Length: 308
Image (cartoon, rainbow, N blue to C red):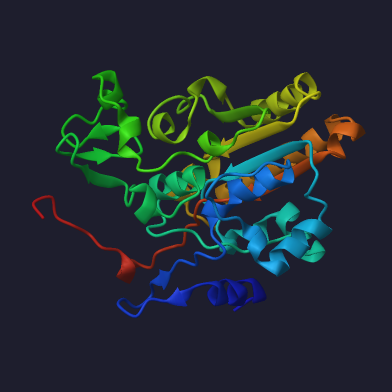
């Protein structure tokens, strides 16, 4: 067992009710990331916990020069678990420099639940999205939260297309709705999912979302955005689902997964080289994830028959 795995296991406690399950840690959780990043810009999010109550984490962030930033770039890499950190050149360098902070995800560790927690700043039991497919009493049906459709009518976005206010499904405001400051807020999301599905609920203003075609296009757009808005404070969010797609198809420890991770890293480094020094000096970059993935052994696979 490597040291990173040992540290990760210290972060969460085993669940007594089921072997192999762990309880999420609400003192160091992914739902605290965005409220923490806002503090780097000198802003405060009402009624949200940050990671700064932990003295060790606050000291790490201060040492890394995260505070008093003018530009904040938050990169959410879907399905980058602590087991995959060893494949990353940038994150291994962060470990050497003491800039890697292990965080707990929420439960269940699925994209729809985790993203809702990240964007509201609350755990699942407070925002209500406690699974991928949940019963919504307002419409009396089970809803696929990721695609905003029902089990019978499974076309993506069929609910909002039919006039259903899907934003009402969420019990809490998003983080962005509780920030009363003047700044430029922009999100970059893959074109195939931008302004659709779950983003209709967890994003306060879809007009701030911009679709990109691939990772190269994404970081080139970041460069141009920072040039355009350099006179203002900028909060720039990037969602990259490439690793999640590769992990589902080839496995989280596959050669394809590593290629995808290196593609992201190489373009992030390219961005740093292409930006002027005065922008880099005022920019903080946060890389985090919603959850990880692990390889399942054959004995762990649960297969259901269609009737069941």
